[in-house]
Length: 88
Image (cartoon, rainbow, N blue to C red; front, top):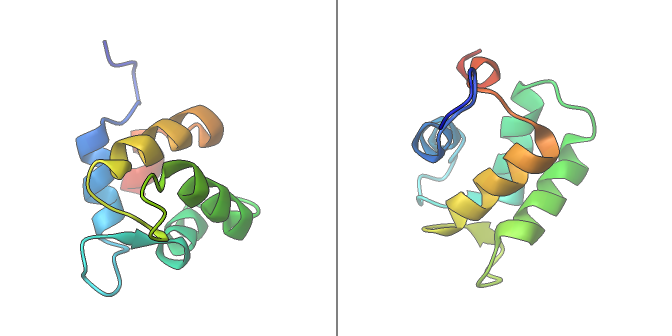
């Protein structure tokens, strides 16, 4: 059951897509850093690095396909993101 204000993986994916600067359908560390900066998170560069490291199962340097679910889990657990923040 979804808690009040919590985002779903699909909502998270949709939010992330607006930061896919090169339109390749994958999120790089730099693109994720830009997304986190939009939320005014401290140390966005470090958080982006750690998040991509945790989510990038195939080690191609980007978050793609099913890895978005892994990124969502990392963000939910370590960054405590809520949908209200993403709608900004």
